[in-house]
Image 1: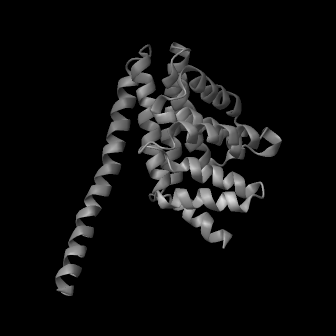
Image 2: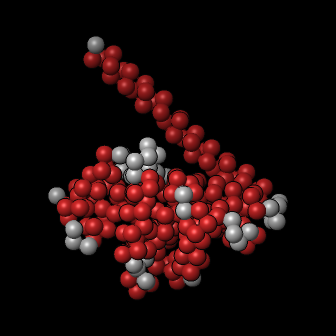
Image 3: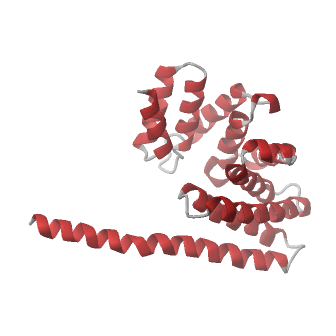
Length: 229
Protein backbone atom coordinates (compact mmCIF):
# COMPACT_ATOMS: atom_id res chain seq x y z
CA UNK A 1 0.00 0.00 0.00
CA UNK A 2 2.84 2.39 0.92
CA UNK A 3 4.51 1.69 -2.44
CA UNK A 4 1.28 2.50 -4.27
CA UNK A 5 0.90 5.79 -2.38
CA UNK A 6 4.53 6.71 -3.02
CA UNK A 7 4.18 5.89 -6.72
CA UNK A 8 1.02 8.02 -6.91
CA UNK A 9 2.79 10.93 -5.24
CA UNK A 10 5.67 10.74 -7.71
CA UNK A 11 3.27 10.67 -10.65
CA UNK A 12 1.49 13.75 -9.26
CA UNK A 13 4.78 15.62 -8.91
CA UNK A 14 5.80 14.75 -12.45
CA UNK A 15 2.43 15.90 -13.70
CA UNK A 16 2.85 19.25 -11.95
CA UNK A 17 6.16 20.11 -13.61
CA UNK A 18 4.73 20.72 -17.10
CA UNK A 19 1.87 22.70 -15.55
CA UNK A 20 4.32 25.08 -13.86
CA UNK A 21 6.41 25.42 -17.02
CA UNK A 22 3.28 25.98 -19.11
CA UNK A 23 2.17 28.73 -16.77
CA UNK A 24 5.44 30.58 -17.28
CA UNK A 25 5.25 29.98 -21.04
CA UNK A 26 1.67 31.25 -21.17
CA UNK A 27 2.56 34.39 -19.25
CA UNK A 28 5.50 35.03 -21.57
CA UNK A 29 3.36 34.47 -24.65
CA UNK A 30 0.62 36.76 -23.33
CA UNK A 31 3.22 39.43 -22.55
CA UNK A 32 4.82 39.21 -25.99
CA UNK A 33 1.46 39.30 -27.78
CA UNK A 34 0.24 42.24 -25.68
CA UNK A 35 3.40 44.23 -26.38
CA UNK A 36 3.07 43.64 -30.12
CA UNK A 37 -0.54 44.85 -30.08
CA UNK A 38 0.32 47.95 -28.05
CA UNK A 39 3.34 48.79 -30.21
CA UNK A 40 1.09 48.72 -33.26
CA UNK A 41 -1.53 50.97 -31.61
CA UNK A 42 0.24 53.78 -29.70
CA UNK A 43 -3.01 55.75 -29.35
CA UNK A 44 -5.03 52.88 -27.90
CA UNK A 45 -5.40 53.29 -24.15
CA UNK A 46 -6.69 49.79 -23.47
CA UNK A 47 -4.02 47.95 -25.45
CA UNK A 48 -1.27 49.95 -23.76
CA UNK A 49 -2.37 49.35 -20.17
CA UNK A 50 -2.99 45.71 -21.00
CA UNK A 51 0.61 45.47 -22.23
CA UNK A 52 1.79 46.96 -18.94
CA UNK A 53 -0.34 44.47 -17.00
CA UNK A 54 0.94 41.50 -19.02
CA UNK A 55 4.55 42.63 -18.57
CA UNK A 56 4.10 42.97 -14.84
CA UNK A 57 2.42 39.58 -14.44
CA UNK A 58 5.21 37.87 -16.38
CA UNK A 59 7.94 39.75 -14.52
CA UNK A 60 6.35 39.15 -11.13
CA UNK A 61 6.14 35.42 -11.85
CA UNK A 62 9.83 35.30 -12.72
CA UNK A 63 10.77 37.17 -9.55
CA UNK A 64 8.52 35.27 -7.13
CA UNK A 65 9.54 31.88 -8.54
CA UNK A 66 13.20 32.89 -8.89
CA UNK A 67 13.32 31.45 -12.39
CA UNK A 68 16.88 31.11 -13.70
CA UNK A 69 18.12 34.50 -14.87
CA UNK A 70 15.07 36.20 -13.37
CA UNK A 71 16.74 39.50 -12.54
CA UNK A 72 17.68 40.27 -16.13
CA UNK A 73 14.61 38.77 -17.79
CA UNK A 74 12.11 40.34 -15.41
CA UNK A 75 13.92 43.68 -15.49
CA UNK A 76 13.61 43.89 -19.27
CA UNK A 77 9.95 42.84 -19.21
CA UNK A 78 8.78 45.28 -16.55
CA UNK A 79 10.88 48.13 -17.97
CA UNK A 80 8.88 47.62 -21.16
CA UNK A 81 5.73 47.46 -19.05
CA UNK A 82 6.63 50.82 -17.50
CA UNK A 83 6.86 52.29 -21.00
CA UNK A 84 3.38 51.12 -21.97
CA UNK A 85 1.91 52.05 -18.61
CA UNK A 86 3.23 55.58 -19.05
CA UNK A 87 1.82 55.76 -22.56
CA UNK A 88 -1.54 54.67 -21.14
CA UNK A 89 -1.73 57.20 -18.31
CA UNK A 90 -0.71 59.98 -20.68
CA UNK A 91 -3.46 58.93 -23.10
CA UNK A 92 -6.03 58.84 -20.31
CA UNK A 93 -4.91 60.68 -17.15
CA UNK A 94 -8.13 59.83 -15.31
CA UNK A 95 -8.00 56.11 -16.11
CA UNK A 96 -6.87 53.94 -13.22
CA UNK A 97 -5.25 51.12 -15.18
CA UNK A 98 -2.31 52.98 -16.70
CA UNK A 99 -1.27 54.51 -13.38
CA UNK A 100 -1.75 51.30 -11.43
CA UNK A 101 0.15 48.94 -13.69
CA UNK A 102 2.90 51.49 -14.23
CA UNK A 103 3.43 51.59 -10.45
CA UNK A 104 3.38 47.80 -10.15
CA UNK A 105 5.96 47.49 -12.93
CA UNK A 106 8.25 49.91 -11.10
CA UNK A 107 7.85 47.84 -7.93
CA UNK A 108 8.93 44.68 -9.73
CA UNK A 109 11.72 46.60 -11.47
CA UNK A 110 12.98 47.61 -8.01
CA UNK A 111 13.05 43.93 -7.02
CA UNK A 112 15.43 43.35 -9.91
CA UNK A 113 17.77 46.34 -9.58
CA UNK A 114 17.23 47.53 -5.93
CA UNK A 115 15.08 50.35 -4.62
CA UNK A 116 18.08 52.69 -4.43
CA UNK A 117 18.84 52.30 -8.14
CA UNK A 118 15.19 52.83 -9.03
CA UNK A 119 15.24 56.03 -6.98
CA UNK A 120 18.41 57.27 -8.67
CA UNK A 121 16.63 56.78 -11.99
CA UNK A 122 14.00 59.25 -10.82
CA UNK A 123 11.14 56.78 -10.54
CA UNK A 124 9.84 57.74 -7.09
CA UNK A 125 7.67 60.67 -8.21
CA UNK A 126 5.87 58.83 -11.00
CA UNK A 127 5.40 55.74 -8.85
CA UNK A 128 3.91 57.75 -6.00
CA UNK A 129 1.70 59.64 -8.44
CA UNK A 130 0.67 56.37 -10.06
CA UNK A 131 -0.43 54.67 -6.87
CA UNK A 132 -2.01 57.82 -5.42
CA UNK A 133 -4.01 58.37 -8.60
CA UNK A 134 -5.05 54.71 -8.70
CA UNK A 135 -6.18 55.02 -5.08
CA UNK A 136 -8.06 58.24 -5.83
CA UNK A 137 -9.83 56.96 -8.93
CA UNK A 138 -10.84 53.54 -7.55
CA UNK A 139 -9.11 52.13 -4.51
CA UNK A 140 -11.16 48.92 -4.72
CA UNK A 141 -9.83 48.12 -8.21
CA UNK A 142 -8.09 44.74 -8.51
CA UNK A 143 -9.51 43.66 -5.15
CA UNK A 144 -8.06 46.61 -3.29
CA UNK A 145 -4.71 46.53 -5.06
CA UNK A 146 -4.21 50.32 -5.02
CA UNK A 147 -4.60 50.43 -1.21
CA UNK A 148 -2.08 47.68 -0.62
CA UNK A 149 0.35 48.98 -3.25
CA UNK A 150 0.33 52.52 -1.90
CA UNK A 151 0.86 51.23 1.62
CA UNK A 152 3.79 49.11 0.52
CA UNK A 153 5.24 52.08 -1.35
CA UNK A 154 5.39 54.15 1.84
CA UNK A 155 6.71 51.18 3.81
CA UNK A 156 9.70 50.23 1.65
CA UNK A 157 10.93 53.70 0.73
CA UNK A 158 14.29 54.39 2.39
CA UNK A 159 14.07 56.94 5.20
CA UNK A 160 16.07 59.47 3.24
CA UNK A 161 13.55 59.22 0.38
CA UNK A 162 10.51 59.89 2.57
CA UNK A 163 9.51 56.57 4.15
CA UNK A 164 6.24 57.01 6.06
CA UNK A 165 5.35 54.01 8.21
CA UNK A 166 2.35 55.78 9.70
CA UNK A 167 0.75 56.21 6.28
CA UNK A 168 1.65 52.62 5.42
CA UNK A 169 0.02 51.28 8.58
CA UNK A 170 -3.16 53.30 7.97
CA UNK A 171 -3.43 51.89 4.46
CA UNK A 172 -2.85 48.30 5.59
CA UNK A 173 -5.50 48.80 8.29
CA UNK A 174 -7.87 50.16 5.65
CA UNK A 175 -7.28 47.22 3.32
CA UNK A 176 -7.87 44.68 6.10
CA UNK A 177 -11.02 46.52 7.24
CA UNK A 178 -12.43 46.48 3.71
CA UNK A 179 -11.21 43.13 2.41
CA UNK A 180 -10.00 41.14 5.41
CA UNK A 181 -13.08 38.94 5.54
CA UNK A 182 -13.09 38.29 1.79
CA UNK A 183 -12.01 34.84 0.58
CA UNK A 184 -9.89 36.68 -2.01
CA UNK A 185 -8.05 38.81 0.56
CA UNK A 186 -4.30 39.05 -0.06
CA UNK A 187 -2.11 37.47 2.62
CA UNK A 188 0.41 40.20 1.83
CA UNK A 189 -1.71 42.66 3.82
CA UNK A 190 -0.95 40.81 7.05
CA UNK A 191 2.63 40.07 6.00
CA UNK A 192 3.33 43.73 5.21
CA UNK A 193 1.70 44.95 8.42
CA UNK A 194 3.40 42.25 10.46
CA UNK A 195 6.74 43.30 9.01
CA UNK A 196 5.93 46.92 9.87
CA UNK A 197 4.98 45.95 13.44
CA UNK A 198 8.26 44.08 13.78
CA UNK A 199 10.26 47.05 12.51
CA UNK A 200 8.49 49.36 14.98
CA UNK A 201 9.10 47.13 18.01
CA UNK A 202 5.64 45.62 18.41
CA UNK A 203 6.56 41.92 18.47
CA UNK A 204 3.24 40.54 19.74
CA UNK A 205 1.25 42.27 17.02
CA UNK A 206 3.87 41.36 14.46
CA UNK A 207 3.68 37.69 15.36
CA UNK A 208 -0.13 37.67 15.19
CA UNK A 209 -0.17 39.19 11.71
CA UNK A 210 2.65 37.02 10.41
CA UNK A 211 0.97 33.88 11.74
CA UNK A 212 -2.24 34.94 9.97
CA UNK A 213 -0.35 35.48 6.70
CA UNK A 214 1.54 32.20 7.09
CA UNK A 215 -1.74 30.34 7.67
CA UNK A 216 -2.86 31.71 4.28
CA UNK A 217 0.21 30.23 2.61
CA UNK A 218 2.50 33.28 2.62
CA UNK A 219 6.08 31.96 2.48
CA UNK A 220 7.65 35.32 3.25
CA UNK A 221 5.66 35.50 6.47
CA UNK A 222 6.83 32.00 7.41
CA UNK A 223 10.45 32.99 6.85
CA UNK A 224 10.10 36.15 8.94
CA UNK A 225 8.42 34.22 11.75
CA UNK A 226 11.31 31.76 11.77
CA UNK A 227 13.77 34.65 12.06
CA UNK A 228 11.87 36.01 15.09
CA UNK A 229 12.19 32.76 17.07
